[in-house]
Length: 401
Image 1 (cartoon, rainbow, N blue to C red):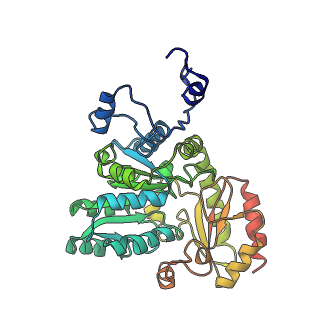
Image 2: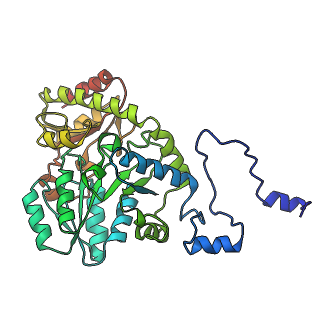
Image 3: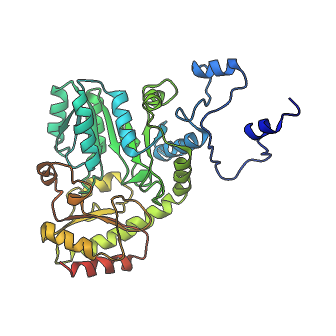
């Protein structure tokens, strides 16, 4: 049709007028993709040919950003990796578990996880027959004995550094146990990012990121990523790709594009986050209101040597225990003026949180206390501002206790 009518011109898509390659990744805001022929469509639907079909199955913007995250995790490791983007870090964890585990299988993990992950395991997966075992993952002898004696344990899952106590576990040792008994291993690498820590280097099977945090770095999108050396699981027809497609846990092009822009400054941001966090941790260690500082860059941290072995630097996250408990924590938080009270982390500005009343409010108190998440614990996501401004705010807030 050389001369369509007015209404048809309104409704039909325009021809792409691009003549040269764009310098920045385009935002592909389309819900579906057109086929050249029915034969091409059939080939893509039957996995004979790779191609985009529908936004829930994949999108060029999303795929490009996922490939970049996989490249960052694999850089210099000699490993091949693939990644997928999800609607959140929680969606990435849930999709991985649903794809790789079945009813009757068990997850072995630590008690000092991000509160939302603990709730996901105990309140969503466990009622559907995927049990969670909480254990101190520092006790490698007990971990190995437990895995060896219980064939139902199919997944070893950890955070290192953990949220919010900054506990670190030995990735190489945990991956070795998983490999010896033919189990999967997974780690949430959100706090460290691949700039500071690459779990693939130590034999970990799956890596999770809440890209909302440091990878994006600017607090303007929510998304998650899953990276693995089991690349067949991530391709069209693979178990994880299929679960993502059918459960609808996919990311979207806009959030993927925002992640892409944020990652361009990841290396320089992480350098400043680490530099500021170490200085603040040292200041807090000498503050009379503080009984303990959790920062794995401090020699006083019980897992300092583990972190030193597997991390390039020690990150932008820390937490500290106020001597006055819950009352001191509330007074301190209400006195903050420069830092931002917000239930997230990894932004360019400093964010502060009281886990007992916020991120871990719905975690059983006995589990929380057993794992060092006390009523007076304060979590700090150190930003890239001038460090003296951050320290000044913390010091003036201490005066209110």
